[in-house]
Structures are given as structure tokens and as C-alpha cells.
Length: 466
Image (cartoon, rainbow, N blue to C red; front, side):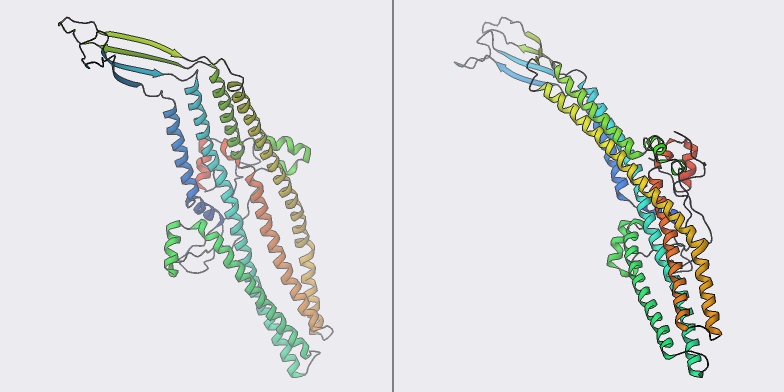
């Protein structure tokens, strides 16, 4: 697999700058990286996954041990006409022990099978952390968009208020071409802005409600339900993070070249590697099924104590030893079918891996095409649309000031500016969300680096340590 375009490209590297405090002067707003870190720390799934892994590791050790031997004790051949232990020569007290052995290499295969299953769990955690980062990151970006939209509307509301004041003054003085309907139009636009603010406030509350559980400890959330004063609130930075693409090569290659390149990248993705472990488990099941063709052996030994005869003469004690084993002769409907079943199950798991790779390819190509189109649209806004709209505003305002234009045209121009600013903000945020989606597919590149690089990324809060 080819190296990354730059060693500084990490999954969620963000531009760190001056931050604004939203609620309390002493409270530090959450950046995107900090939010992701908190989500990882407060995710109970990760902790539960570690316990499940530990349980399988311990079970693997237990499966490598033989079953306990069995002890038997009996009084054999006791005469029923007197129940006298000395009466008959074959009456004895027997103490026996037996041990059964697994078929072939069944013990080591079972142990290996559980080990493969346990090895899935660190990979599952890495995939979970990647998905949580995307989920929390997108919620953070949605909240950022809503917050900045509210700020933009608040700024433009003051401009509309000034326009309304100018229109009222002009109408009251009788100078110029201002009409009463112009004053009504200005008030109408202010009302529409108020309605937009209400809608955004509703979205803000909804997003905060979905983001807060990821950022706060479960115990704190339970306590906050009893005491509304402790209800967690989310304050985020007012700077849009600049998230770098983790792998730039697949974005530049053609679609046919991408398939070859992407297979190399996706092969190291934790979700795909976890599926490889699942394939290993299934293949181990096939090996285990084949062991049923081997006989199952057992050994037993017994010691028989006999009492003296009625005349006081000593009788010899008895010792027995034996071996038991079964003969798997009729294998057509049992062993053969069991092996074929395990083999089919392995092929089914391999098909699951192929479907996962196809799903990842589809997700990547979809996000890539959307990102390319979004970049073109963003360039259009920055290079042409926004400058043209600002020119229109200036021209309409100049014409109105010189009594050569209409007040309604000034209002329409200001609305067009606000709409374009909100749309550009939405495009900027959507672009970062798409980069998060794309970076998810290349999270496997972080797991193939040396420990020093991993520690550096861990310190930055962006690594996916297992």
C-alpha cells in the first residue's frame, strides 16, 4: 500500500485558532477534536467490548484444558443371601478412574477459534471509534452551521432595521420616492427573519439534544434529569475546522484505477480485518468438524480390594486397566454433512466480506463525487456569485439613494446577500462532513504505523488505538 501524501494528514486534524466563549467567561467551548475525544471517553460500548474480549480470552484458556477425570467407587458382586463382604471370593470394593481425550486436535482448534474471535474485538473497537468520530463530528458541524446561521441573521436583522428606519424617515419627510408599502415590506422581512430564527433555535435544541449524550458521562446525565440546573449544555467553538483528507491519492485517480488502489486501503480497514478474523473462525470450525473423523480415546484403571476369606486366609487384590475408543464408520449423514456445512458457512462469511467491500466502495465513490461537485459549487460562490450579489446590493442602494431606484429592490438585494451567505455556510459545513465520511474509509492507514507515530496521534486525540 502506498504511503500517505503527507505524514501530517490525520483523520481529524483541525485548524486551531482563537475561540469564543458562548455562555460563561470561564467555560471553554468545545472544538471538534475535543468533542470526539469526549465521545470516545464516554462511550460505554467501548468498555463493554473490552470486557467481552477478556471473557473470550479466558474462555480460550479454559478450552485448551482436558475435561476432569472421573472417579468411580463401587462394591461389586456382594452376595444377597447375607450381604457378607467376606463370604464370596469375587466380592470386592472397586475404586476406578477414567479419562477421556478429545478427538484429534480438537482442543487446540477450539482454543484457536476462540482466540480468533477475541482478536475481532480490538478491531471492532477501532471501527466503532471511527464511526463515533463521524457521527459526533457531523453533529458538531450541524450545530456549528445552526449557530453561525443565527449569528448571520442577527447581523442582517440590524441592517433591515436600519433600512426600515431610513424608509420611515424618508416617508415622514416627504422627500424621495419612499412609499408606505416600502415600510410594510421592511417590517415583513424583519418578521420573516424572526421566524427563521425560531426555526434555527428549534434545530439548535434538537442537535444539542443528540450531541450531549455523547459528550457527557451517563451518571451526569442521570443526575441532570433530577436537577434541571445541572442539565448538560453544549458550547462549541465558532471556528470551522479545516479537516484534511486522510488519503488524497484515491481522490485524484480515475475510477478504474481507484478500484485497485482502494482495495489496498480497505484491506487494512478495521471492519474488513474483523471480517477476516470471522473468516478465520469459520475455517477453524471446518477444521474442528474434520476432527470428528478421528476416534475418541479414553483410558480407565481400577483397583479392587478383597477382604480375607471366612477362614482368615488372605485374598489378592485386583487391578484393571483398559482403553476405550469409538469408530466413526458411518460418516455419510453425520461427519460428512458437518464438514460440508462448515465449509458452506465459511463461503457465506467470505461473501459477507465481499459485500462489505462493495458497500465501502459505493460509499466512497458517492461521497467523492458529492465532494467534487461541492468544491465546484463553492468556487462558483466565492469567485462569481457572492461578488455579483454584493455589486447588486451596492448598485441598488446607490440608485435608491439617488432617487433612481426602488426600495423593494434594495430589500431584495439584501435578502439575496443573506441567502447566499447562509448557502455558502451550508456548503462549507457539508464539505467538512463529506471529508469526515471519506476519512472513515481510510482509518485503516492509522493502524499500520509505528508506535511513535501512533502515540503522537494519540496525543492529538485523533488516533484509533485498539
